[in-house]
Image 1 (tube, rainbow, N blue to C red):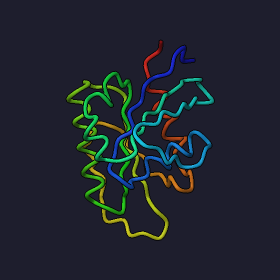
Image 2: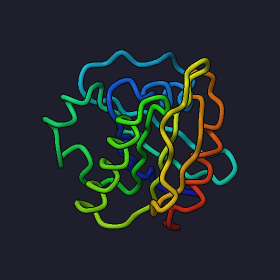
Image 3: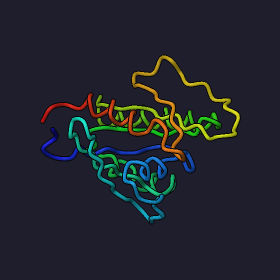
Image 4: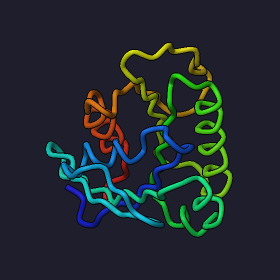
Length: 155
């Protein structure tokens, strides 16, 4: 069981599904927030606790830069699987976070949307796990975060 929450930075481009991921985990409607929102999620099996930091738009993230992810103990990027540029942006965000923070538990969430063509092909040679989810329906989100919780260091 986590004695304190782990700071988790949620990255990805605009409309990738970050806020939907937060909504699934928090059980609250999609946040419509200016700036940064923080939602707490506790993995039911292990008790590992995350404070999930989400920023409302890419422009805000660029303005916040390093201060947004500073101190993050885990990093998650969300990509809209129907847009190859979203996948590239999410992978770039994870690489940039690793350069700034060093290695840490991370994952890439590949958000598929019902009824959309999926042209983006995830890369197999990435150093982090990738999970296909449907954030709007809540499919696969809790399972992916449970996997991340298992990879967090003991406190």
